[in-house]
Amino acid sequence: MRSASRRVRGEGKRLALVPTMGALHEGHLSLVRAARAASDVVAASIFVNPTQFGPNEDLAKYPRSFGRDCEMLEREGVEFVFAPSVEEMYPAGAVTWVTVEELSGKLDGRSRPGHFRGVTTVVAKLFHIVEPDKAFFGQKDAAQVAIIRRMVRDLDLPVEIVVCPIVREADGLAMSSRNAYLSLEDRKRALVLHRSLERVRHLVDEGERDALRLIAAGHEEFVREIAVRLDYFEVVDSDTLDRVADVSRGALVAVAAYVGATRLIDNILLGPAKSDNH
Ligand code: AMP
Image (cartoon, rainbow, N blue to C red; front, side, top):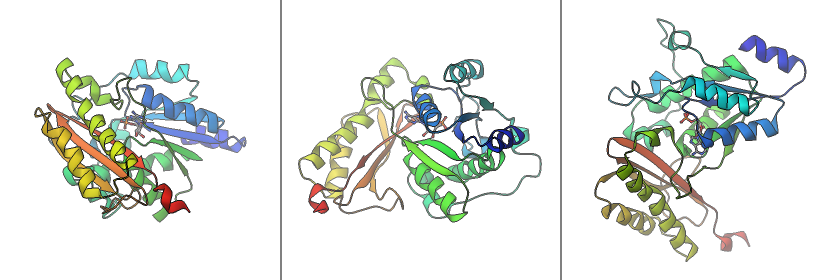
């Protein structure tokens, strides 16, 4: 992978990387298309990274569809698929980690201890192996975006991070490889995540700025959907992931919930209030 990367970059071409765990859907393909539009050569990685899964999480049953993924990537004109084995990525005796302190314990990091340490370690490794000019990530994983941006800044990694908007199903459900786990009933229940965020957006459009009142409104939607267990509903600064009291300067509204055994996440970004701009 590295020699292929050095060859194309030696020819003066700009290389983009789209890191994924496979089981590709339109959300992933939106990143691939953005990468395609912004660079000469596109590499996608497919690696279900064991170090970002907790002991009781879904590593073993995480959906895998390598052949289909490769076909989809080929149709999008992706030049390279990097799909290393676990042994290649983590040879025996690997004990070195990349940790973005503080941020890694917030949002999903609070309910999934060690998750972001696994993410930042594998993403740093992918950056070193592929040496892309740009790397493309989805806003779907908002905490991941903040943490990777911080890692790139703190470690002076020579890569530009590009973030693409959340791709949704027609009814608003954020696309996710984990949606494949949902029964028909749970698929309907899962809409509560999007509904709670839309409720918040509506209140903000009407002038509400108080984070606690927005959170209370978000919670209310979950009270009505008893089969869904809320993990968190937070209003935070999108860079620091610290809670904010007021959304006038913009905020990230992020939610995570268990629909049956399936943990889903979603979020919206609120822009700065118009009155702040003049
Ligand atoms: P994953 O395979 O779930 O690790 O996701 C790989 C990349 O695709 C990450 O940068 C995700 O944020 C992004 N992604 C996943 N789902 C979506 C979506 N619905 N919209 C946009 N990007 C997404």
